Image 1 (tube, rainbow, N blue to C red):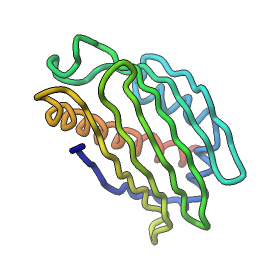
Image 2 (image 1 turned 90 degrees about the vertical axis):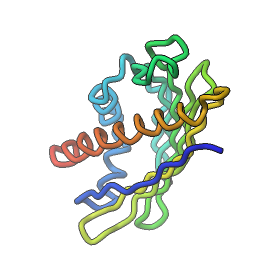
Image 3 (image 1 turned 135 degrees about the horizontal axis):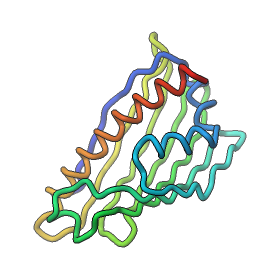
Length: 163
């Protein structure tokens, strides 16, 4: 059974401002640099009438205990996001695959209006098919996701204030 994570980040801007941010290619270029990616190739950033299609090939440090790294110091991630607006709400389906490893995550994000601006809900299932260690590896990956989303909130808050 996969490990699930779910939490909400508050933003002081409406969902329309977040969608405008997501539609900018330079936002993603700067965000992944800020997140510490070793390399980033934005394969697809297509603004559509309904929202946005994104595909990114990323290389990140493997910030997991040695036993979970499977001998690697880096992870190659293929991240796909499909965003659409439904009224004032933004919805995204997200999938992150770790290339060459039996691990990944899939889930959804929802940005909804709130009295303070917006709430960005993150809801993911993390799966690592590693015999005897799968649950521990999923827990480590979940910790990395939480820390990454916290850094992303910091970056997004600053980006939105400056643009």
